Amino acid sequence: MTDIARSLREKLLHAAAIDAPTQVSDLIAADGTRKWLFGVGSSAVETVYIPEVSRGTLCISSQAGCTLDCGFCSTGKQGFNRNLTTAEIIGQLWLANNALDPTRKNRVISNVVLMGMGEPLLNYDNVVPALRLMLSDDAYGLSRRRVTLSTSGIVPMIDRLREDCPVALAVSLHAPNDTLRDQLMPINRKYPISKLLDACNRYLDRAPRDFITFEYVMLAGVNDSETHANELVCLASKVSCKINLIPFNPFPSAGFKRSSPETIRGFSEILHSAGIVVTTRKTRGGDIDAACGQLAGMVKDRTRRTISLRRVPA
Ligand code: SAH
Ligand code: SF4
Image (cartoon, rainbow, N blue to C red):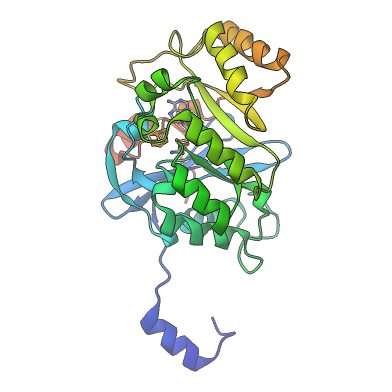
C-alpha cells in the first residue's frame, strides 16, 4: 500500500495482518452455481455464488458448524467447530469477488446472504463488523436491502441487530406451531414463536425493507399439510412478511423427504389465496451439494464425492 505514509505502513506491519482463508476447492455446477470450500484452521466452510439474470448472490458462512442441531440441516448434524473471525467472514466475499471479477470493473456480486453454515446471530461480534464492511462505501458499498441475514430466531440478538446494523432479515420458521417447531428446531424451546414474531415486528421499525422473509422448508408428511398452511396464514397475518418455501434438500442420514411438487404447489396456493406473498425457492447447485442445508464442509468427503465435477482452473 504505497499510498499511505511509510511510518503508518511500519506500524501496520506490527499491528495487523492481511490473511484470507485458504481455498480448498472450487466447483461449478451445470446451472452456473459455483461453490468454494475455504479452509479455516482445522475445519472448512462453504461459500456459494448463485448467478441469476438480474443479480448475483453470494451465500456466505458465519460459523464452522452450528450448535443448534436443527434436524433437517446438514450443518447442524456435523456439530460445532468454532466461530469464524471477521476476516474469515469478509474474506469469503473478497475471495469470491476476486475469482468472479478479477478486473473489479463489474459488480458481479450484487447481493450477499448469510445463509451458509452457522447461526450468524450466535457469532454477533464477528458478524456485525463484517456486515459493516459490506455496507461501507470504502469497502463493498452494498445497500442494506441487498445484504440479508438469516437467523433461526435468536430473539435478543435480533433486537441488538436492529440497533447496530439493521440489514434485511430472513427468519427460519419451518413450522407453524410451537409443538412442531420445538421438534424441528430445538432453539424454539428457548424463543417460542410468539416471542419471535414480536421481535420481527420490533425489527421492522428499522429494517431496510418493509417485510421480514420467513423461510419454510417443505418436509414431506411433517409440516406440509393443509392444516399447517392454514396455521401459517394465521401467523403471517401478525407480521408484515413474505414467505419463501424451500423444497427440502436431502443429504445422507437426513431422515426427511422433500414434499412433492404438487404438495408444494397446493401449500403455496393456500397462502397465496389468503393474500400472502409467497415464492418457492428454485433449488440450485444440487449436483455439487451447494443447495441450502447441504453445506457441511467435510473436506475429505467432499473432494472424494465431487471428483468427477469440472474443476475451475487455478
Ligand atoms: N442458521 C441460519 C442461517 C443458515 S441456514 C438459519 O437457520 O436461518 C440457511 C437456510 O437453509 C435456513 O432457512 C435453513 O433452515 C435452511 N435449511 C437448512 N437445511 C436445509 C435443507 N436440508 N434443505 C433446505 N433448506 C435447509
Ligand atoms: Fe444451524 Fe441454521 Fe442449520 Fe439450524 S438451520 S442447524 S440454525 S445452520
